[in-house]
Length: 366
Ligand code: M6R
Image (cartoon, rainbow, N blue to C red; front, side, top):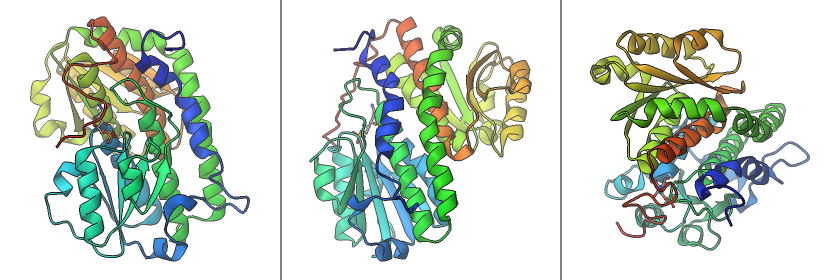
């Protein structure tokens, strides 16, 4: 059942190249348009959208953080990401031009469902992204994309996250296209590069096992770890920290790297693990300078870095390499080593990786 893997989490991490491929099947029309006809919205209605809220919980919320960067960059409309448990109890600004995107692997998270109902009553169009066919999120939204993760058994979400990020990336491309911000040629190029991430994920899994193991040994006996990055890297850090917390019970916190000196750097002393998303991006140099500050205070730096980057090789104690991708797709590749790291730390600490204590796969109570 586990296909030869020791646990479902590892099996599901290894399914991610397939998830990327399956999610993209049929999504680019021969004339170069992104095709999401299950959206339930006409192109005119989509063109009218002037604000997007992504509402979700946990890992699905982190997929929303990635999407915000892409929607704002490509469609130039404001996008807010909100925990469903907050959204439903506030009075968010909703008009008929508001698109609410509800993201839920299980499709039955109580807070996400309540937020969908509330948003529809207030007049928003609601689009669901879920992994479970016919789930309440699918039934109660105006339109739905099914992520092609297939059943996810490990409580910690991995392949579903990748399915969500790829689906949200398609949605961001579609919005960019209907808003005339992305040309057909740009969309074709982005689509091709998005597809390439399947092989890039495979490459990471094939080559980085020993590096992940070394990094995990450095975290195993720590009391706490910080995950840092900027831009996309800040969003990726949130998912890395959550994964580590849930499966290894090691306290972890994500921080935008530029915020370190406003407080969290006080935590750093000899041997404190800092996991950095330090891939080549527009803010790479800034992240490196934050890491130097951590290093000077004795931190053990574990960097997720772009292959061929010699500078980071000198600075970090451990490097897990990922192939070069455009910043927009960095979440897809850089999250994979963080999933592997969390699992490896959990195994070293003797935790039940598939069934962490106190957690349930579906959170159907508030
Ligand atoms: O089924 P959902 O995507 O709505 O679930 C949301 C969260 O409960 C879920 O992502 C949770 O954080 C996972 N344990 C993450 O690994």
